[in-house]
Image (cartoon, rainbow, N blue to C red; front, side, top):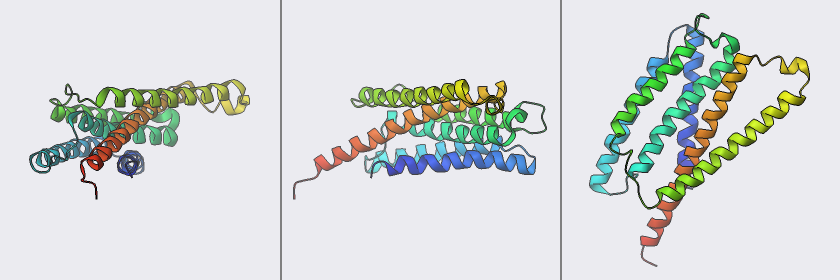
Length: 210
């Protein structure tokens, strides 16, 4: 199914990001550099493989889709890391609290910027599918963000005071960041799924009738 490949890619990226946070906290060493290096290495290998497919089978992802795969990888890695960090240390996520989790998140983000340089030629390319697919992705992302914010606002308004007090202002701010990253991830995932469905339909139409 077209759904499986993007989801099967997204979930391990989330797990790797969370795993980096767990290792960093358990061992007491910075792991952000490892996440950044892995992201750049993946981007280099993926880019090379797609260029080989372009020269042989022509079944490689188009330029807009390649950018989506890169953004999905980076966003999921950062989302997994930030979400795990907030759950693990809460207010101690700040700088100077005997962990490097905050620095690690920014290091991974810098790794994504470096990986983007490998795809700089793809950023301005568009195809006839892009506008409609992008619009559906944006709608999905905003829908998820609005639903999450409504639920959070309802909880803040009506939850008993002792439960509300468990969310400090700092933790709440980081929770908002997690929701934004998650909604952006939904947008990217929806777009990747739509590209997969469109490509599958195009290939099916090209096959001769049996």
